[in-house]
Image (tube, rainbow, N blue to C red; front, side):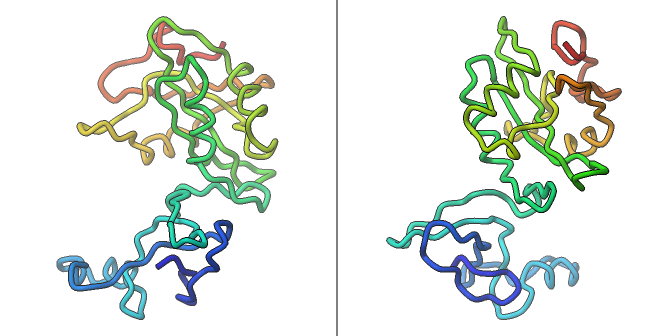
Length: 200
């Protein structure tokens, strides 16, 4: 079911109201081995396992996943789906990989930072990427900073967002939105100018 994670009340089937996907049944685990806190966090009462996936339910019962709860960015009181911003970034012809994470901001609490890996032989500037997103997203959803370079991925090809969240804390943004970080974007090799890690 898709429900409010606190009350366990199902959200309306309107395709707009976001809730958390929760599951229960004989194929769902009983809990985490020797980790009662994680078990309590995951089940939270009522026998429903909290998946951490945020979704909407449509009138026909179709469930559309919108984001992971931990990936939602709250900027100035607005909830921004990292998946929605990443979808816009992937439409840019020069973008090979993209990930959007929150970075601390004194004024807004959090702002979103886009990490972009360009396709081989392609070029793009932070201004171009930001303008491209602004044409496709609400202004407040447009990334405030862009870092270019290879993205850290797991052996199965999943982008390591936890690593990018740490790096986003170190990001310094110039007035054009170009960003730089003093950390390498790749765990296996140092960045270089060709990778586009440095501000443009």
